[in-house]
Image (cartoon, rainbow over all chains, first blue to last red):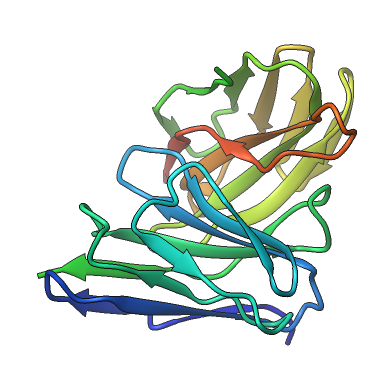
Amino acid sequence: DGGITQSPKYLFRKEGQNVTLSCEQNLNHDAMYWYRQDPGQGLRLIYYSQIVNDFQKGDIAEGYSVSREKKESFPLTVTSAQKNPTAFYLCASSMGMNTEAFFGQGTRLTVV
Amino acid sequence: EDQVTQSPEALRLQEGESSSLNCSYTVSGLRGLFWYRQDPGKGPEFLFTLYSAGEEKEKERLKATLTKKESFLHITAPKPEDSATYLCAVQLLISSGSARQLTFGSGTQLTVLP
């Protein structure tokens, strides 16, 4: 089945630690995205990538980093510089920037 | 600043009671408007894309329409399994002719009671 796989589903992190969220897609999509969702708020864009080895900051990139070494993979690192990292993180992909995006099932990150 | 506003924030319907959800936007240069359904703890599921005023799309009990300043998601004779949060998002055209990334509204939480 084609789709987007995020792992893990739940993640707990101690304050001061970096953590990496995985996102893999087998849809042969060029564009990939990371969003953050907080209760009662819309999705906010963290980073996006249109092609391999290239990515751009979204609206809330501070405290996050990404890489795009393979077309299928777009991992997100939440660094200790992110002041309020507890949230639901969603990865998405699309054929191009002009087409609809499809989402993974999300990773819920909790800082303890 | 680009704004996408969804109303109401929450809506409770009896099974079979039709209604509409609203998504209004204060942007210029709209390239497309997208509707998604999101179940609790899951990622959004794509429903529709609308590109121009007057366009309509349907899927089962859902029909999406678009005007120059807003979109409606009409739900006809809803069932309990239609309960979810419905998100809309807009995509803008920028001066180079390419599209910006999506801007999402906060969603409408729909509950359909049996």
